[in-house]
Length: 211
Picture 1 (cartoon, helix red, strand yellow):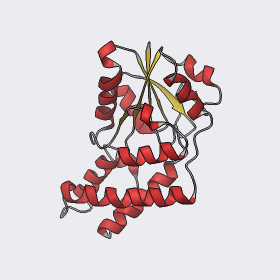
Picture 2: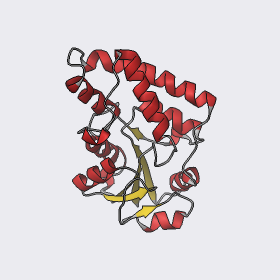
Picture 3: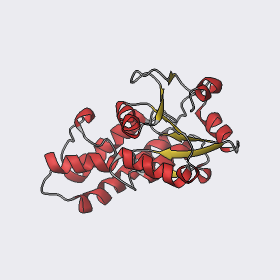
Picture 4: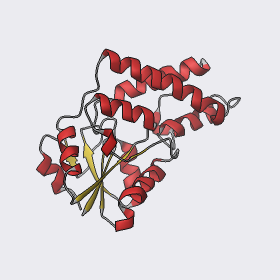
């Protein structure tokens, strides 16, 4: 058996720009402040982690306890409105790839996303994924991507001591997998990596990178 762990935005769904736009708008509405969008300078590029850094550097008069539920509520509303206008689109072949893994007893499947769980579920369902079959670890669980991935592993594969391969799309995925010594496959062209696929249209290629 093997454990396949997957990111959501930019990996399974073409939603990176949508997510960014809705998040920035939610913070602006909640605080009146335009958040610094240089994500590379954030120690934790997750929804909760970004808010923590925003408070520290731009809004020290606010607390995470009061700000997170407010931003999250507005953000969820923004995502719902956007999805009503236009359904989320899968990365080519992603839904078939995930379904094939879920229906094969040789694989354990988990989702580890830096986004909040509610919006990850909304986008996945909009794109046609069956979220009832997916165990989703998210920014609801921790501000650190590494800790979110550890939790996803604990929930699904660690008890069986399974080898893990993570599918992601961004620089922070590279960093997290390096810290965890986890096998990584990059989806798309945002970052360079020796194991990379353009999308999931060639599932055999994707599976060839699994430990």
